[in-house]
Image 1: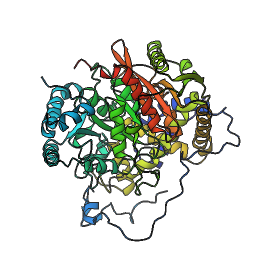
Image 2: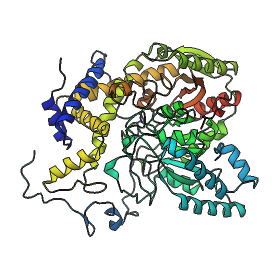
Image 3: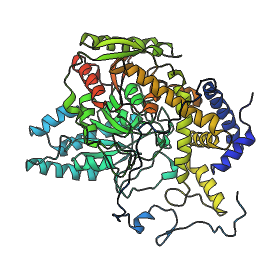
Image 4: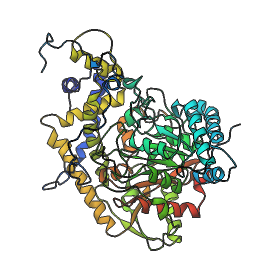
Amino acid sequence: MSRISRAEVERVAHLARLRLEAAEADAMTRQLEAILGYVAQLEPVDTAGVPATAHVMELATPLRDDVPGALLPAEQAVANAPAPRGTAFTVPRVLDDEAEG
Amino acid sequence: MSTPLPGLGELRARLDAGEVSAQELTAQAFARLDAVEPALHAFLFTRREAALAEAVESDARRARGEPRSALDGIPLALKDNIVQAGEPATCASRILEGYVSPFDATAVARLRAAGAVIVGRTNLDEFAMGSSTENSCRGPTRNPWDPERSPGGSSGGSAAAVAAGVVPLALGSDTGGSIRQPAALCGVTGMKPTYGRVSRRGLVAFASSLDQIGPFARTAADCAALLDAISGHDPRDSTSLPEPPLATSRALTGDVAGLTLGWLREAESVPGVAPGVLAHVREAVAELERAGAKLREVSLPHVPHAIAAYYLIAMAEASSNLARYDGVRYGRRASGGGSLTELYERTRAEGFGAEVKRRVLLGTYVLSAGYYDAYYRKAQQVRTLLRRDFEAAFAGCDAIVLPTTPETAFRLGEKSGDPLAMYLSDVFTVSANLAGLPGVSLPCGLDAGLPVGLQILGRPLEDATVLRIADAYQRRTDHHLARPPL
């Protein structure tokens, strides 16, 4: 039984903003199929009523006083950007972009 | 020919006695690095001039009688996913080419404050995703015991650098075994602390509920000294435990009398576990019994499902964490025009390697509508069952002993074409991450000339106990002194 189709791999690749070459999509489909086949062993494990563990330590969200602290200067914050302009990041214009889901 | 550096204890004694200077130690580390690096490829970046300048300062402090700590003047390496201000941090990924960190990871800041001399940044599987260091965009690291074999991963560079005597200490990160597995395959001691012991601030995130920074060294005592220096609460990591820095070094009594060890029953029925590995680990456990520890069998019934649960959770978290690499704020950006979406897609297609893409795709899939309950939530429920298994087992023992890996170092290329086979090599290590436990791997002999690792897992927060047992073993044996023929 096929668990994941190539079309589904391509749909997920778009959700993850990854462009796959044709051969890459074929290989990923085969590999994801194998991995999903392996993890299917969890299906029969009886988990009725078992809470999910998102985190091993039961920590409350820490709160602090709302006072400004030292921040990364804007010049440093953009220093690693591939195409900064002043203290801003730049992206291709989006307002003319085709509608994206 | 260069000389490998000895462990921290001997270096500290020689520094304090004035027999050697920090400058000489740093020079020796780089001489050793130059001698072995062509065969190993353990490092991605070195910082010779800066390290030597820091060694000069360390020597001046010692001359004034003001050394800052036991680590002052000691050469040390960082895995290239733990950031240092002014230095690159690529995670062995093309997507972070050219990145220079504007800040120190908290662990790095503490080491610098302690006077440690950071010599460079070590190779890893891209974003720590792998078990062989073959998923590095800069090529694999090789095992000092046999250059045709993998050092393990993902912290393969740190493990190889310590095994080859380039540095006595290194930091790695362990999400599913990435410190303990390469420590085992390279014949050094490596430790994953309890989740939350060491701040994750400045550790590039892979799977945030599992990631933990930890030490590599030649001995458990040296690991303890390094862990003590980097541990303790950090208000800038909201998952950092509200606990003071550890003092595990003081817990190393050499005494295990009265402790009960649990032998993992399931270890013997794991498919692919090598008889030679089991035999060495059994003999190591027998040595601990001769030292006064009691032994009983324990069962963790959900361990056979740990790999499946681990990879689902780790990939889901990775797909979310790696969304930040978009070609806008840092790192590589694909050239050519097009829309913002096309920019994202091309940047990530060019910047990520195959294993990272595989995990991001699978993680996105299991979090997507219609699959969340069947995969991600199910894995989190099995994680709870595994934690309960450990709670039950630790009701009857103080630590669990088992192999670190099912087999000794595998050949480069042996598993790299089969992602699932590579994942299965983590069978003994992922459970500690899922349950947040402290675990140490230490050498317990050679099988056909390759190191075997003994793993000791403890209750949450009992980092000192696993180090104490490992140290007691090393006081009675000399397997940790074996050096690769390099």
